[in-house]
Each structure stands twice: as structure tokens, then as C-alpha cells.
Length: 479
Ligand SMILES: [Zn+2]
Image 1 (cartoon, helix red, strand yellow):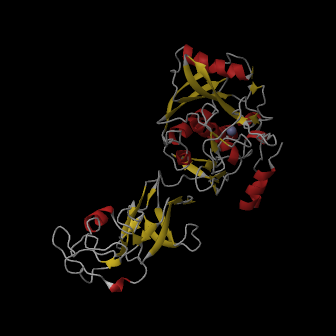
Image 2 (cartoon, helix red, strand yellow; image 1 turned 90 degrees about the horizontal axis):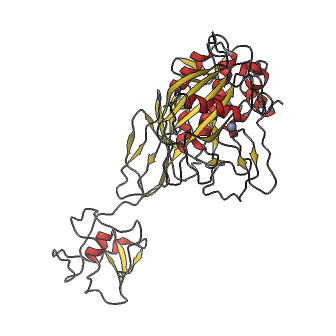
């Protein structure tokens, strides 16, 4: 079955490309009206045994309470069947060695667990082994697990609960539950050697390039099967990391995991020397790999992760402050910081462009200013990371007078009523906490608690003392 959406996506980018790109197998989504689904790891959902209750929603993908993979995720390959003389073993080993720390894998760092532990952009290729048709050439799902468990039990690979074991089958091998017809790969988990072992099946795309390879004639590394597999290794890896036990991050309606939501979408592509198309360079090689779901800003398919953080102060009494952001991986060409006076960024201006991790903003008038930052590479820019708040600039006015005679603080400073304060001041009852952004608790405690000189029911406008570090913020005090 062709995926019509893919054809449209590619066509919008480059008409000529359509003829050489296959839509591939449709990842089957089977939504049931009115009820949530849970993932199978194969791209479609099934009815849950218990009612679903997402804990976190809002970016088009929901968190259901299960673990994510934290720290460094280790990739293990099991080359099943006959891979002799096939450059796939080099191409896909290079892929596994370079996907960790890439701008692309950084998308997964927008996912986290119930304790706010975030997925790290850390993947290492740990080890590989071979399996010479121990289960024959037609494997069912249980036999895929057997291939993994036997590799572990015979000591060819370690038992590693922070690993993802990929069973990579040669083109003469079928997976009978639906390879080439309903899926090109899948992931799941099982208890092996007493550990929760995450594993995945990815078959050689050369078995059915019309279904499981984006490019069937030429491909970036000159191996249609391997280049097709890179797509699905990425797909199953990012799903394994964000939904290892099929109970963490997925779309409750469609039971699509993060990669399912972007299957067969490629974003901005470029042409490599042999004429094939790619959308990312990892290490020394180009690959064409699907986009992944960015769990931020309402959610979207993306090729690039966003900066890991942005720090925006909540207030400024001077109109000068610093905006800083977290580093992004890879060969960054610049960060772009935008500023706007509304959180929707309807009229943004460029506040900074450069390689620095922060910028000093100066000379802002009273008002509220919002910031967002993105990272750019030679091939394009990421989506934005938004500050969670704007900066409220309320510039303190220098004191212009003193209090009435006899109204002193402990240091003997004298204050007066300052009629220049106008009507913009907030009313503060000394028995209450400070109004946010209008005075500091320090200021309040120091100068208003023991105001025995002010009569009950009388409203005064008062300056703060000479030399006070915040200079002056005036308040109407109702005693
Ligand atoms: Zn999937």
C-alpha cells in the first residue's frame, strides 16, 4: 500500500524526485472511535487492557507513566542470515556510531519521564554479532526474540537493559508477521536473562524496496537495502528510547509513537554526488532518514533538535538583562534569538545572531519582552525553544525627596511624600505580602512594617531611602 502523504510531501520539495522515491508501506493506524489505543511497536495500536489515562498531553503526543531510556543508549546489531560482501555492515555500523550526539537525535531530548529525567543525546554502538540462520529464513515474532536471547545466552552480546538489540535480517529472510506488507521494522521488549531487554527487527529493505526503501534505484551510500534500513533503524531506535516498554510516550488516539507520527516525511533534502537524495550527514556519510516528532511548541515533525534550554529572567528593574541558552549538538553555524512583545511572536525582531551561549540585552523600556532561540546549521535552522515567561521590565525611578520629618527607618534615613509618583502605583497593605514585581520583600520589611508614624486609613506615597540598591519604587501605602 502506498502512502499518499509521502508522495505529496516529496512532490512539494522536488517533482523529479517523485519518480525515484517509493512511498513504502503504510504504517497502519487503527483508531477506534472514542477510545484510546496502546502501541504494539509496529506502528499501529490495539485496545488497552485498562483505560488509558495520559499524565501529560499537549504536544500531540502523550506521556503514560512508563520509563524512557536515560543516559547512554547502546546499540547492538545481530546480523542474521548472510551479509557476506554486503556494504550494509559498514554503512549501518557507521550510522550507529554517529547518530548519538547528532542534531537529529537531539529531537529525542524533548522527551522525559515522570521524574523529569530527560532523554540524553547519547548513543553508542556497543557491539555486534552474527547469526547464521539459526531460525531459518522465515521468522515469526517469537523467533526474533529467540535470536536476541541466544546471542546473549551464548555470550556473543552482553545482557544490557540500556541497550537496543537490532535483529537485521538479510534479503533472503522474511519476518512472517508482516515484513514488507504491513511494516518494515518494529520494536518491543521482553525479559531476557532477568532484564528488561529492548529489541527490534529491521529487515533488509532490498527484499522489498518498493515498500521499505525511500529510494529504489540510487541511494546515498550506493546500497538501496542498507540505506533503506538506516531509516528504520533510526525509527525504531527513537521509539525504543522514548517508549521502551510501550507505555511511555505515544499518541493516545492513534497509538503512534514519536517516529510513527513522522514516518515517510523527510524535511529538507539535498542531492549527493551519485544523484541520490539525503537529508543529513552523520560522520562521513549522507543518509535519508525520516523526520521525528518534536515534543515541544505543540509538536511537529522535525529533522533537528532545538537548543536544550533558554533562560529568561522574570523581571528587570533596569532594562538590562541577560538571555542565555543551552548548547545544541553538531556543527552549529549560529544561534538566532528573537524578541517580541507578545508570547505569540506576531512581530518578532532578531535580538542576536551568533555562536555565543548568551547575550546581554540593554536599553529596554517598561513593558514585557518574550524570547525564543533556535540553532542553525549549514543546511537549515531548527524550530525554536521558547522561554517559559517574558521579562517584565519595570524601571525603578530614582528617589526625589524624603519622608516627613520624624518618619525614619532604623538607619535614620528620612523619607517624604513624593507627589511626583502619580497614579500608577499599587496599593500595598503592610500586613500583606508584597505585590509581585512591585517591591521586594526586603524593601517592604525594611521600610513599611514599622511605620508607626502613618495613621490608620491614611494613604501615603513614599519613596525608598537614598542609597537603596534598587533605587526607588514608590507605593501607595494603606495602613
Ligand atoms: Zn514505529
